[in-house]
Length: 123
Image (cartoon, rainbow, N blue to C red; front, side):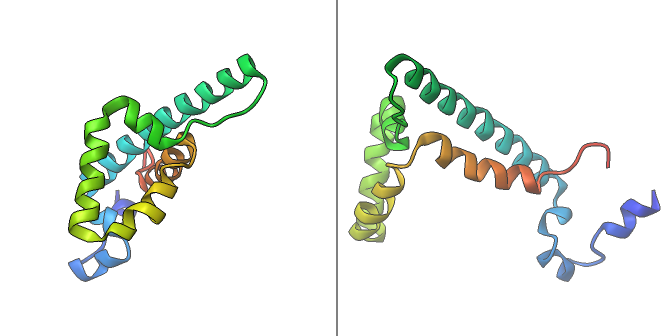
């Protein structure tokens, strides 16, 4: 019991180093979101492998295509908001390029980070 209390920051100034230790609820939400993203990334990768098995050529499905097929209106809305409220160049060379990455990699990266900062069960 004392070991747990020793790891907790003593004041709010210590939270800049261990921000998630100050907010265990955020740790749990981050962990849950990480596992959901990991499962989605795994499903996207499995879809790419099944496509490879059927066609004989590997073609990763771009994240933008997946987003467009799921909900095209939200993709168009985000594009309009970024171009209008931030800068048009942010969308075309930056975000459009990222949306061409494989869906599994775009989901897997944040999943790994969120799982890494999630609490370890039993501690």
